Image 1: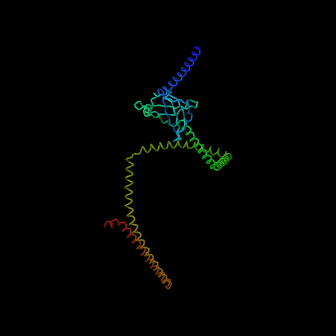
Image 2: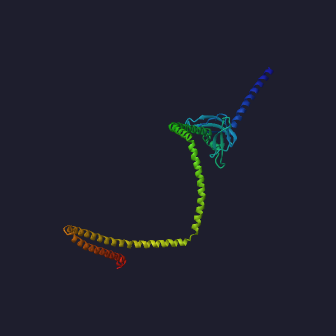
Image 3: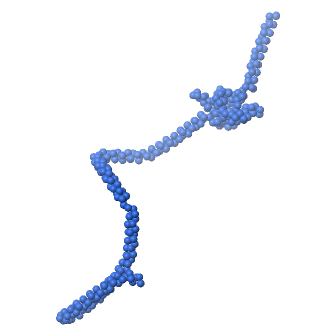
Length: 335
């Protein structure tokens, strides 16, 4: 009987020890949750690709916790939420930035916290005092930005390829015609290669001649330059002044010459009138001569000859008078 009682006592003691061990472990875990770590909720706009349970939470490159759960915000499906468990001593403030980064080439994403102002209030302590879960908004995932950029590039590339395809269709005909024209031109060049060679030879000869001429022209220009340098500039100015004076005198003389010409024209008109009157007189004389005896005619002709001489003398006198008037035109104008 005494031996059985010992077994019962041992069994009860063993069960008590096991329960105490479980209680100690639970108490230790509860103390750890309340003291060393705390919950931090990270809101991630856009995609949270690569982020999952067990992903690291880093602060300035140092691990401060792990991701416990990732889910979609029911009220705003464009935002993903990551509940993390981090060290409660992590100095997270309002100026702290949260980014989603990749851990090497594994494709595993991490939450990277960086930056904090020591003068600002710590979000973890403030949330604990207010009895709420601390939250921080992460910047859009770099992976998402990369994928979006790649998508934009692919869209632009597709647009460029479509435009290039349309351009190719539009210029196919003109390009084909251009190629044909080039082929025709090349054939023509091949057929006229001899003529082209002659032309190039002629051009080469011409260039040599031009080179020789350029040498001569250079010497000529130098001689002309020396000649111009040897001329006295003051003398040239004097010659130009004399030419201006002569031109002015010719201009004044031309005015007087115009007046003389007018006087001569008047005299010539008077002589023409006199000649017309003489012709009329001669016609009448011819009519009279038809009924006159030849002897009388000879006598009359002799008289007419004398009259004609007198008329010529009178015309000469008139011309002299006209010349005198022309010569005295300046004096008349002055009066």
